[in-house]
Length: 377
Ligand code: ADP
Image (cartoon, rainbow, N blue to C red; front, side, top):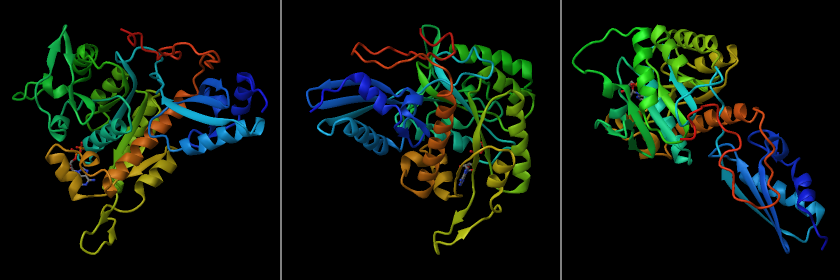
């Protein structure tokens, strides 16, 4: 058996492809550690997202690459995940502790924006990510109800402690609003409230903060998007023309603030008749896909019109948690993974320092720190 060096193995692994990120391990700087222990080669690989569906393929690629050098070694591949920060469009600032803020927006109300936000957040957490959900819908905060959590949050050391439900941290602007008094929301008022709010919530460290924006594309929404330093935006829509026309306004709003659009989620896309199993396209067909193509943004997913989604929202138990294997649960999960992949694809484009670790030493906390100056507290 030939004696292999770490450098030889590193070189051999560099061209192995990650089939999900569609880049090589070398390009991704994914190989974090190589150890050779008699006849075993141990390789530590760091992936930039949870729910990565290509681990088996990478493992066999790594095994083959080592076998080409010498077939006598056993190869043990271990995985870890570190979600990287894309950084806000302005390149600085951001919410303390938050790597990637993802806005969920819609051109109009009632298309299921909050339902999409809740289920995507829970789906990302189910895959292992640290996730927060910020209900910033100043006109009708509904997320605490959708997650069955409506107690007022506590303060600790002058900071607001978010609530927790279904593995995610949760905060709603509704907790700050007087329920009995209609407020006229204007950009400056929202900006002032958000400043206070965003800096006072103790999120800890989050891979993703899903932000449920108010419906529409006016001054208030624009102010929020700028304040929050969005890493990526998701537009929720239904397939019919009137909703899509508004969804396009949403796309334009994010383009204006130079926030990347992760994609469109087409909600209430189709209905499967529970009696006969036939598929009905109540709100028309393919609108989300056409809009996505026309504006060169991905279609992240299509979610069925499903009584279980409505009921689970009403009782505070999102469908992705109550029935993850249902068509609706799976549709949300796939949309969440597509969004995470889009962000990871953006994040790995950012330059970062070489990080291969040939001699074992304690892991660095984060050699590619996000842009937020508040990240380490
Ligand atoms: P928005 O945030 O766009 O105003 P919501 O998420 O509050 O919309 O949804 C409006 C209503 O539609 C809620 O009762 C919700 O449970 C229901 N709903 C949303 N998406 C679906 C769906 N795919 N199937 C069935 N009901 C849905």
